[in-house]
Image 1 (cartoon, rainbow over the protein chains, first blue to last red):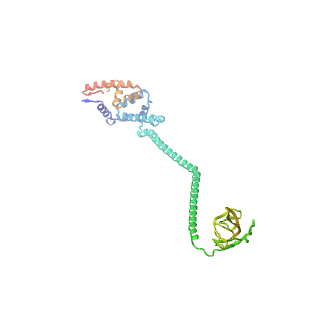
Image 2: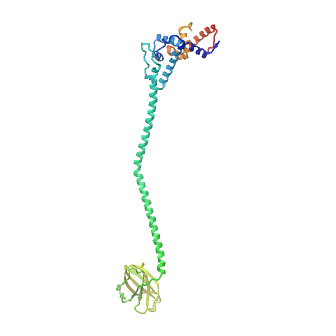
Image 3: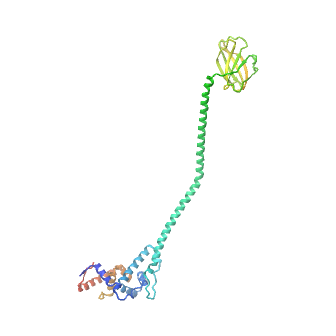
Length: 300
Length: 60
């Protein structure tokens, strides 16, 4: 018969199993095993425990298990502080599960602590994120509101500008469409104002002002400028100035009629209500000379 | 096994129960080399005895 090391061990364990022995009352207590693992035995106790382990594979197995658990607890759970069960004088044999209880508690505490720590860290981070978010919202709100109001103002002013431009364009279009209409359509009841030099005070520096009353809806009126005597100038021009002597209108193409007068059709748009002076110049020998001067006050 | 000296008997017995030489050393308060030496010598003696009984045991 040939055995190797493992086969010999199995054979030995089987022969020394608790089930193969008549009496199991002398098995080691858990306290004794714990103290043996902890090295808390005197020499005689060591020898007694060793003698039993040699002859009891079950106690030897439990010893190895306890030693393994203790090593694990020492390494991972700081179980050095957990006291091993102290030997009791009596030979009572408590259940093995009660011996593992402190280690189980330590392991469970460790796992629970880790889980609780992870939960707390998670909640703490969540709270920090929330607080930061709220703070940011508080801090950013005024700037955001200011930027928003500025944006709205700019938008509103831009819309107003666009509306004003649109309105101006529309008015301009209306005016341009009305001008040809005004000029192209006949106009009835056009007032004729006959002005004589004596009405305006011929030769005076401040001629008598002729009052010209026109109806409110008058757009066009005609002035007949009568000359006081015969004039032989080759050409004539008319200059209209306002009360402050600023030129409002001037024409160099004025022709004298056979009735020794001039006619000028004037528009209300160019001559609003106010005082005006009309000066007729004649060209004689290449020089311009004042022929007649009229003063009128327009009221509508 | 009973023929072995006590130290060798305990060392070989615990070795055959699955304990390492370090386990044996820790329990008995020995150094590990001493424990290993006792196991080796004890197994050698045990091999002789087994061979006399007709059992060949290979020491690994």
